[in-house]
Length: 235
Length: 235
Image (cartoon, rainbow over all chains, first blue to last red; front, side, top):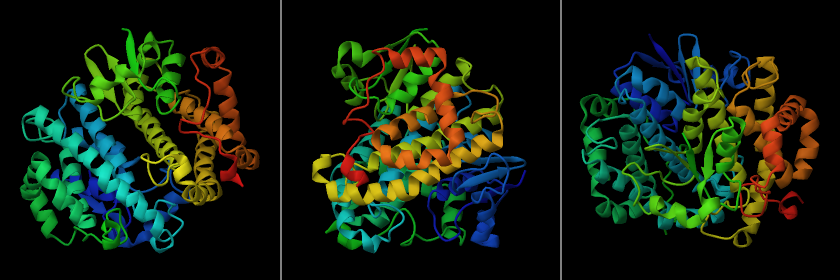
């Protein structure tokens, strides 16, 4: 089956977590808005799509099925492509980790939009500075520490022990994105989280991921996505 | 099996979405920290619990299984208690709706904590005022409009058509909480969202939910949870 991924074509954003899974799975997919432009997203978002329309991108079309919410897409996709153990306990644990990463993504986005999406970053700079200080000083170490402990306890180098799974791809993306957005904080924190850094490196070296990262399918980090680099927020 | 729910004992918070499902299911459960105090939550949060420890409450113990993340708990619990259709397409759709409600919960919390949890509301009042204006003016109508359209299209009065399911409980909770937190905005918006209001009323009238709401197991809304009433934020 050829999947259709619907997401904004100019950013990694939340869609990137799905792209990474599709790439690792060597799945047959089309990144619809990158081929046809953002207008392709509109009918669904205006409620003109199928009855069970998603609230927001990303969403994945798989035949007649339309699946929204990043973590839900991954939860559905992973067992079909060997990206999660088959047993229910493993699937629940992987999903729990992915949902915790989703919370981390939300908090990362809030660093440059604490007042809301309706305003440009430039119109919420003082608020962003306070939020970013809280993020890099408190929240970021807490999230990194949690995932570091998980890897340590699971004893196999991955978040599910010796089983590679889709939350590993997502944790890779967090490290990559946070290096771009908060390089000073990450330089300070990475030595304390060696297992997380090693996991990032192992994911980056997987053949299909390495090929993807080197391709023009990987959109570069930029100032429109979740991970944005504003040096003043690390001052 | 007797479930153990671990959540803060003095607020509804995210745990309330799980409590509502357990109550509607007439499940055998103990609300651990309400019986033994918040200290009961600590071992797990300090990493002294099982290897696969959750990041934060709520979490549910079901025998040896420990499940974290509100939406994940509901996704696991619902098919065991008839709170979601058995077919995978129904389960995915219900989960997608629940995850959208989880985003809505996060944004509701941000209205009084846009700078972060490390600071009291009193230390982020100007930021809260801006965020709340954006929330009641733009985000709240968007979320309500989305769920209103879903109910309309599904044609059975519930979010999954004629099948009552756990996201209905969660949407009830959103309406109840938002009425407490933003009564002026809700008074203005409710007439435009009659199906959502009717769904709230139908949930409240379900015998087990009605009994729960009238019991002292239902913690009243207060100024420590997700839904807080600060009149100045609606000025």
